[in-house]
Length: 284
Image 1 (cartoon, rainbow, N blue to C red):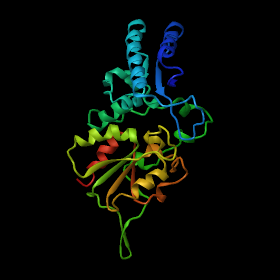
Image 2: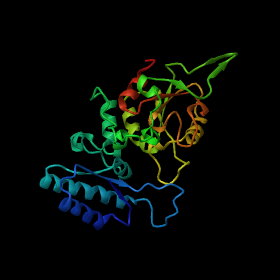
Image 3: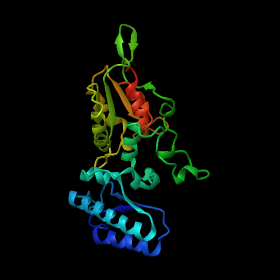
Image 4: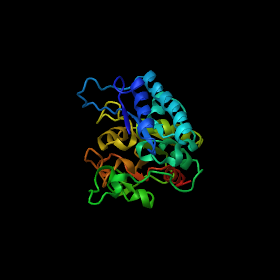
């Protein structure tokens, strides 16, 4: 993986890096070019976000080298992370470009696989693929490797938040209630056009800005309970809310909170297009 730091190792240096790979390591299976991630806690002045021009230049460089690698070693080898296409507003490459989505866990092709799953082009989830650390003997099941909420594998599970109260009876939102899909800012860019194609006015995408980490943190997997609670507190009480399990590890968000602390009841679902499609069909 190459973490591209604007003004540091992009431009001509990125070209030199990829030339060195071709010269010395032509047997490599794949390389991911990912943008530098910054939080509000960053104290290194030389580290900054990409400008639009710089992000476009990285995508152009990757595409040029894909052609060269394919000619010389028979496969594209280098790929730009989905974030680059979201940052630049460029369309994602076709599915067959991704060589079986082997770098799905690195954020390569996630948006394309989600679209395939959500639209019914595939019957089973395409990713994520198992990572190296998932098979290391003795490695603790923590962080992104930790088991996700069981609801992600077994279907929908309502949890957390306030239910609608009538006298002494608490009622969960009805299955046919309007639906809000909770996701990160980048996720919203992927989901919004897919949901729009459904032609349903009862389904909306709710982007959750990441104020907890700040910076350019916009991926769904880094959503935290504090930010989700802030957004949900402004949403109707009687609607259904779908939460992807990728932001939970052993039932907790990265800020240590749980779904039980959220101000609205949420349904935790697996983070793939098939699970979302099925969740949207409930109550129809």
